Length: 283
Image 1 (cartoon, rainbow, N blue to C red):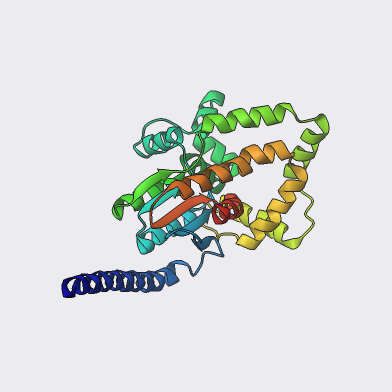
Image 2 (tube, one colour):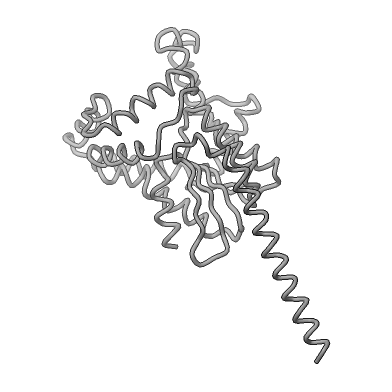
């Protein structure tokens, strides 16, 4: 009997120590995160899954922003997650890593080569900042930053996005269903947007500042992104929106839910945050 009691006490003490260690780790993480979160404009959300022992730090990025890459590096270093999920599929991951090694070329490089225009020549026409931002976009800089940061903290890299070939197939299928009116409304809404609220206008102005500055301008806010998504739903046919966002949101959320990791950092474009959070919370 005494032996059984001692065993029970040891098990209780072990559980208590683990719980205390986890609490101490959490408080230490919170302190380290405070400085990293200071200028994120709501683009990092913290979720605890209601039915599993799992924490998710979801980072919403702007693909053309150097600030996003720095934010990713800082958050991963502070959180020290078990898993880092990136908005990449295997084919896209391989391409991003190859370009980081100086191999292969971006879609932008291919277009310029096909038209016989150099990057320097294009930069003189559209601006060096915009060209640099476009180059960052096609190179997946913040996803590369996430992969490199994961390696430094010995975290597993989880490829969250669905295959790019499926996304392109779904977009072609959706585009084939568009009427001339739908196409005209989409083009007009993108080229000559008519903003119904100040936050959407502010987002587009901020994105232009980010792109024209070569990715150095401050990030837009989550509120501005939410207003912009409402505008995009007005001008974009539902099948296109589903192929670009909704289906991929669900896929990435399912990848997170399938992971048994205790602590995860997810790195996705800011437009995906709401959808991923909604599916993750319900899963």
